[in-house]
Length: 261
Image (cartoon, rainbow, N blue to C red):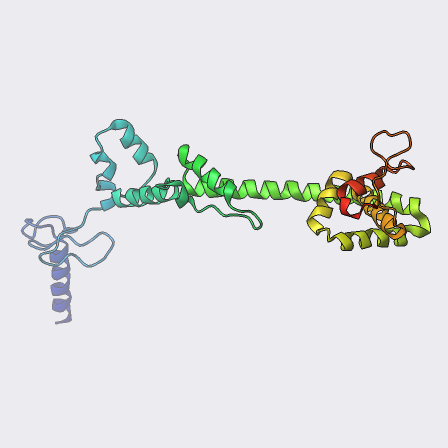
């Protein structure tokens, strides 16, 4: 009985491996008639109504660039490796946004540095619009220019400060112990005439710090002595007062109301 059961099991195994249409006499490694061939990887065979998918769908898909008629454009698009037309359109939209040119100069929205009135930014926006510069590039150029101008101004201020310190050192050595007193005479003249700081800075920029201090010191000294008078030098010449002090003459010309009558 055990032998019969073994025989029946062997018969069913042989039938499952027999190819279709063999009628039980063909290749024992095939599948029985009417049944699908088992998958090579040992998985489940497809059920009724299902079809076996292609081995590699991606390899059999037609590239979307094949729909482009222009050969050069097709080659260019294929070289960009866009997976489909939607991805290419998205990239185009982003590029247009980055390189868009404003409709009018006012739409550039250039940043105005602190302390400026915006006149240059307005002029530059007109240039950018005239030459078709995209908004992003225009803002970058304006920012670089503002940074350059600020650096140049900083360098100028630093050089002027160093020069002023050197001149003041020379003046301190010239005046010696009278330095602080002479500086105070200059401050008194500035306060008396209400000289604004902007004017002092302008004079210092043109004349130098030491020379500006000398000027206001002479004004203050002349005020304290009651001698602030343009006067006329003996024998005339250059409009300098007697004694030939050019700073006193300059002070008298700048502040004629203080001239001695």
